[in-house]
Image (cartoon, rainbow, N blue to C red; front, side, top):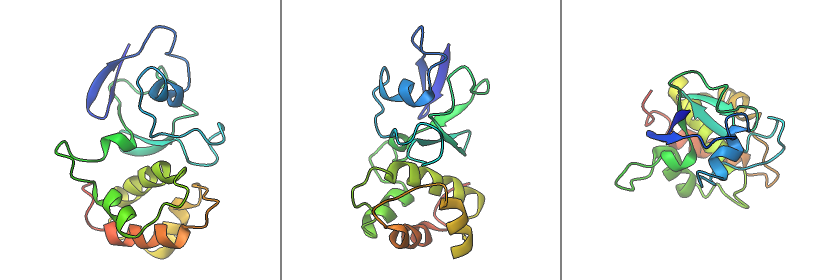
Length: 155
């Protein structure tokens, strides 16, 4: 079995097809930007994009992915030349991370939001980010970063 992650084909090691995608990414593939939080899809720390849609990697298996699906993790956002994705740059400019644990999931959720709604309102941002828990209280900086990146994310 093969899956595409960050535009690269990867063989799924035998025995990993039915493990959560989160563990497949982190363990045999070494993509540790996707974080384990609650393990039940409630906190958003493990959010990745599957064909551009925000999905919880703790709830998916490689076998459950649609045929030919493209998975994007936070490691796949920056350009090949190292140029940061507009969302990553906004996160840095607005000094969003405090502890940083939830940030990769929040960035992936933001990319999905901005692809669907290029210039979201505060209410749309709040609704989209409601499933991303942050105990540090940086939600106001997250909103400011989303507004900064608005209109800069390709659909």
